[in-house]
Amino acid sequence: EVQLVESGGGLVQPGGSLRLSCAASGFTFSSYAMSWVRQAPGKGLEWVSAISGSGGSTYYADSVKGRFTISRDNSKNTLYLQMNSLRAEDTAVYYCAKSIEITFGGVIVQYYFDYWGQGTLVTVSS
Amino acid sequence: NFMLTQPHSVSESPGKTVTISCTRSSGSIASNYVQWYQQRPGSAPTTVIYEDNQRPSGVPDRFSGSIDSSSNSASLTISGLKTEDEADYYCQSYDSSTAVFGGGTKLTVL
Image 1: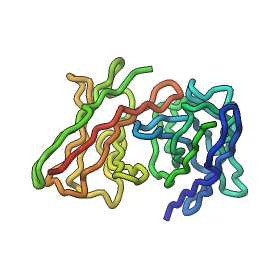
Image 2: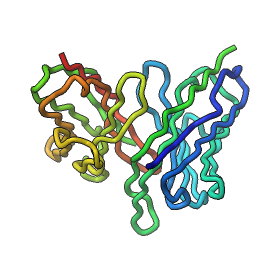
Image 3: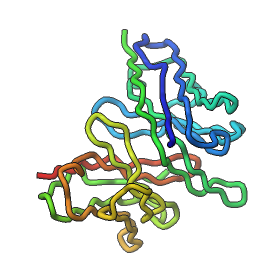
Image 4: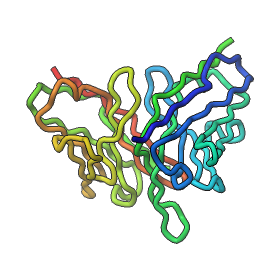
């Protein structure tokens, strides 16, 4: 059974930093891309960042580029999101998601999510 | 990137059939797979349709997905509505290293 368990959320002041973790089990972690998706209170889903199975390729939404860093430790079956220079608008529940990445000629042509964690709440406020 | 537009809300009675649309703003809806995610109140999203019309194991066959090139849209149809289907539904596709979500549709079963 696939399980994804996020941790590391909490209250942080504007300009501060936080590192989220996602512990994965029930599948061969290194064989799959992974993503972070967030949901601000009362709002819809917003893709944040993605990383390939090897960790060699990373992708970011424009809203977090330069502030957030996604990484993974395949020996620990764990996904991370380092969040710096946090803003009030980063307040959200952050979900990690096991991802399906379909490539053609080395280019990603399809990308979606098949399993989701329960999420961890990040609140940015003074 | 393109946008995916969904109705803000839909409602229907138990036992009936409801269809939720997801319209792509530019480019062909057939260019990239469309997925549908269900999010019940207070819970994480789950996948109910992937690759336009495929159901994950465990998702009842009351849920079906389709795409329509003439309207450049995807649809999620839920038949035999149950109260447990009341949830937010999001469509999602992909473009240029970005996963794109629709704004979500609140389904009320009353």
